[in-house]
Image 1 (cartoon, rainbow, N blue to C red):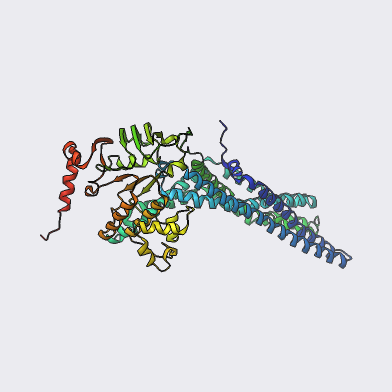
Image 2 (image 1 turned 90 degrees about the horizontal axis):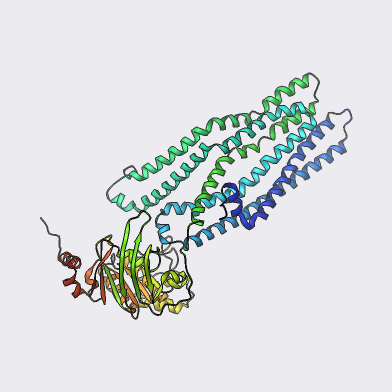
Length: 584
């Protein structure tokens, strides 16, 4: 097995086809560094001419012209280098996000659910943006920060080795401190802890924003939300600890860079008054011998930025190298929309059993209800049909074919879900129903009519072109649920799973949703996950789950006599229907 690359080599591998652009950026930055030096050298020649016994004005003007030309060309090359690095960076950013999104779409839902939204958001936004910034800015700065000082020192040694040696002192110190900062194991661990705490804080901030209505209702402050406060304090502590550990070395480095005039000044003035140095040479070292270290400031933050990027790349690789849902293509095609669970067992990664040796049959075109106490396994069983996870034991068959042998795109063409929680994109209602399907507008409208949402859509400001969410209208829970139903109707799959889809609807919306269900279920294999048992009494069969097993299978009337669990649930449901609040 080929060994995975890590660190900077992995970052260059991610750059992929944009390496040529990055190489061009580096070359242009190097040429710009060379041209940066030329105007200063020409100023040195001008000073020599001005202090000579005979001043040659024509030569001075020629030097000025060359200096101006070199300065203009230098900035043009630097601009071109920046353009090349930014184009490469933005292309890498686009390709990275696209590749990550594509990879996530091929991973089991379990992989996503094991990670918080904040952690995934941080990878897709913050970590990718950090790579873009590093490539667009740090790489050209790094090239210039290394080449310009080197070329300057080489040239200064050709002018006067004594002053060159004096001006070299800050450079030597920086060359020692920067690698020391990069190789410190403690810094690597500190940066990992920094990234972990930032990830945790992102997760809790999203949770806090979502919990804002509850926080307000109970008149609580930010401090009362313990996880939010602790995550922010933890992140702050990580940052302060990192700064505390690295500040001494950074302070020494910045102090020497900022005061690099001192050794040149001391040696230069002594040599000048000893008449061992010309004034023009002294002025050259005051300019170049001091100024060449300024690009090194860009390198002073390189270590921390590189660690952040490498940590971000490592987190992306957790997604890139995650195992996708395997598909064995046998060429078999499901004969119908029947479903069979055959000795199915499923456990989470923490070994908690969700289903244990579950077997049942759902005939094609029938309506089956999954019922049972919370945590009994009914929702998980329904999700396994669409391979949100893979079973550890047994088989799930659709139309006689193991779902692991059905390509994922074909499987999703057969199964649709209507979840309890409706999710709508910040887009038009039309696009929310169409969901990328290549269908004419007439079919979208027909699906909306069948889902009982055409009337309220027509009353909106722009009808089907009305935007939902931020900057647009906001729909009620029942209205959003009917938009979800319209999606499923437009998709027109032979198998439909309804996960307590009317749980949050008011009576008026529930009646319309039930009417839409009647239209939706015609000729389909339907699985209903229900808590309100009165809605599933007419189902063709009801499967009762209890303690991760199938406790009983039958019709409503059969289960009232055969299943103690179902009988108790029905009695509790009947009592709940007659419950009312009374004044004490």
